[in-house]
Length: 401
Image (cartoon, rainbow, N blue to C red; front, side, top):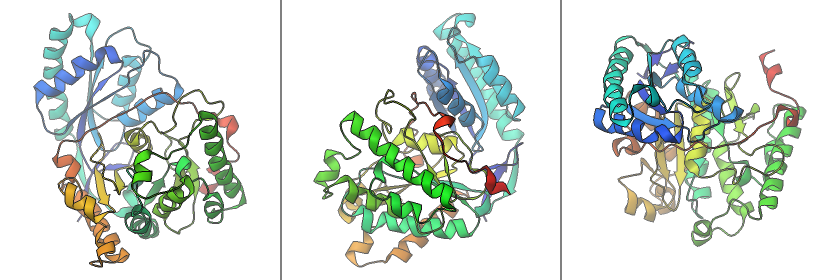
């Protein structure tokens, strides 16, 4: 039986983590030392480096600090950054979570802040464990994201279509599923549009992929790495077809943006490419930046497919690593949860692997750690982006009707 943690807003988490959150790079070292010296289980470090967060970054921080997998927060502020600890602390407290704040400039500097932080952290951990309500979980309570990284020629014929079958099954069970990487869906826009809930969404899907293509064209390159080529892929379109398989074959119910909660259960494309002129750099700085964007939109866990081999996990939400290539699995088996390469070897079919993924999800939701959790992977990346509602053509609000 899957078990979770009931939050004040009605959502349920699959972990009861405590976050230590730095609000500017100047507070990063102090926050990291609190985590290191505190040496407590289930304490993760996240933060934002910029002195002045824009709307995107500020909202991401708010959504991450109130994620259902999070049970308590310690905020670490320098004291003069624009991301105000008082406002964030108030929001967290209203969400029903224990929270403490440290302002380094007001407590005497690094050493004093670290000592006070360890004391506060123990308080938050105790309160987070004491004040939580355990509850039963079903698939309809879950938000699950998927991403691929280190793709090769095996990704699109093993791991990615297996995840697509999982998404079809989970959506039928009432779960919310998120796929993303519009820059790695170039060439598949009409396939996506054919699955849209209605004509308005079909148009938006076409425009979302075209926007990604324009963005990459202006940058002078696309989302195709040397490693993809060395792994046997030849073009962005070929890579896109493999990436597309992760979305399954079900109806697409909407488009969401980083930090936006899906309005109702269903299948959603996350648009991670900034709106407007090219001014924010590479849309997907790395895999962890996009993982965190899905987590900010409520993802309880991430299905991560890889052919060449990626070993990352994430802060806040568990990552299930699904290896497409049997040779990669043999080399990196300690980091991989599922060996989809068995399909190539004739030792399993796509349905066998999709079932193993579903069983792994159930295990994760009973508290069993993923491989990346066991190894201590808690990567976190958050930068600047900008999304403008004026660029959006029709919304998903009418889904509530």
